[in-house]
Image (cartoon, rainbow over all chains, first blue to last red; front, side):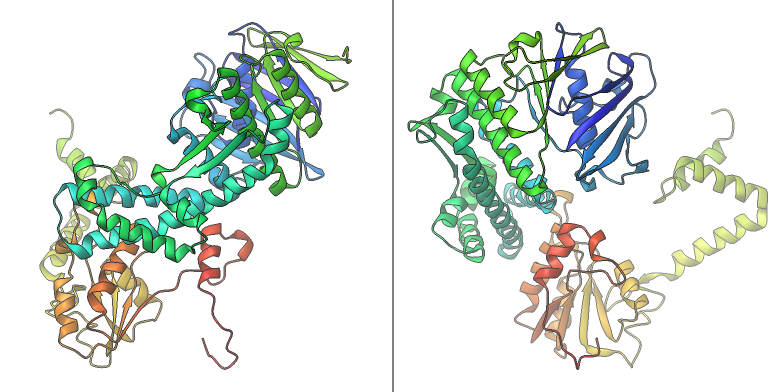
Amino acid sequence: MRLEWLRLHDFRNVRAAELTFAPGLNRITGENGQGKSNLLEAIGLLASGRSFRRATAGQMRRWEQTAFRVSGAVHTQGWQRQLDVEGGSGRQVVRLDGKPVVSVTRMERVLVTVILTPETPQLVRGGPAERRAFLDWVIFGADRRHGIESADYQTALRSRLHLLKQGCRSEPELEVWEWSLARLGARIASRRHRAVGHLMRMLPPILEQLGVDPEQCTMRLSGDLERWFQQDVGMEEVAMQMRTALARGRERDRVTGTTSVGPQRDDLELCLSGHPVARFGSRGQQQRLAFALKLAEAAWLEELLGEPLVMLLDDPVAELDRAGAHGLMTVLSASGRQLFVASREAGEIPWPGRRSLECAVVAGAFQVSMEQAHS
Amino acid sequence: MKGLPSLERVVVVLSRFPGIGPKSARRMAYYLLRRGQEATGELIDALEGMRAQIRSCEQCHNLSEAALCWICADPSRDRGRICVVEEPSDLLAMEKAGLGQGVYHVLGGRLSPLDGVGPDALHLASLEQRLMQGGCLELIVATNPTVEGEATAHFVAHLAQPLVARVTRLAHGLPMGGELEYLDESTLYQAMLGRRVFSLDSCD
């Protein structure tokens, strides 16, 4: 799939713009604060109906304007589809081919993007919650049930803790919530188990191209349920074991106010030469691994979609050395994906491909030029 | 207070209704004013009648205008089959669908510790008593397919299992007249899990 054109109206610092893009690399260049990321944000908004910078509609509309509009045409599965997002005050409206889409979670996957930003390395540097959220997001892309069941699981977690804190001694009452937790927890953990399997399958060639020895890099999901799944125990059995563990952990959970067993404690552990990258890796290593994870996500999504997706990269080489930047762009140019890369100068982004488009941004206005390779 | 405080009060009260916003509430209030004394009197009488008459069925906690509701009072009903629902509105939905050969038990809610609803807040003790009297051959648990509804179903099943031979629950799955391609994934998944053997002789 590829984004053919994009129209912006009163979006961030852009009054009005219409841009046509190249199928391969699209460089977005400009000094800080001119609106490079805004362009990426607009594309991401068309894909998912929300801002990857977690901005509200009010923050995305241009200063003193009532509403913004972003439209784009996507070439996918052999034909063209149009997406529009309008927002700013009141409800945000997403339209596909002119018709309103009821809910963003039910949106067809017309435009699918994977985004790398300067915050992406947090995936490796940050706490386990970042990695769980990443895994859950990856799964949600393939299986919408995961979102509903994760929310139900959270309700059940809070319900049981609430009962414990209130000193509830009613065996059957605690049991029903533990039964819910075990049933939902086993399903969540089993999906994570499978998703990690897919990511691991995609990872080795990506690591190699980013200059990380795949033999030295290990990734595993930690957690009680994952351990049981690895012993080749069925889903029912895992749920039973979790129920037993919950019943046994009641007193401790009441005191600590947390739940000591379940997928809410999972972590995706990444190690290089046996050492956890989160604590012992260099910043460059952390960034490469985080990018590798996102690229593995993209590769898996593409397997499901059956066509290349679109990647958005916001200042991707900020912390990479030359070899790292070269490796990243080589992987990407070989992927056949349409790329949108924001950086201060075009020269920062090595590009082995032939042609690319450069879009220079100054104060929300764009200057587009095609450039031939000067490898 | 200046203006029309008595009218404002009506608007405030009406806008508390589900599905009624301040604008609709205002339209309703104006309508009553325009229709005059008679319309207002009719509404007051209707509301007073409802308040005086409607109570909870002594047996099943359905809404009723007598000690027993019209279902519990109906001798043709099959007392061997009790269907457990969360709210009287769920009971009415089952009745409307023509599924009412048996009798009901209305719990009056569902377990939700975060909202302070525990087993004691539901009509579970009276259900247990009913079951202990014997005569119930099948208990059908028809709570909503939400996480609280499922937990409630589990609680009811646990309570009923020693007392009733057969505890069943409603199937989850395909809506009739729907098309597969428009169903959400979770409904399809439940329908797949709950699939059953195709019987050429069965009438359902």
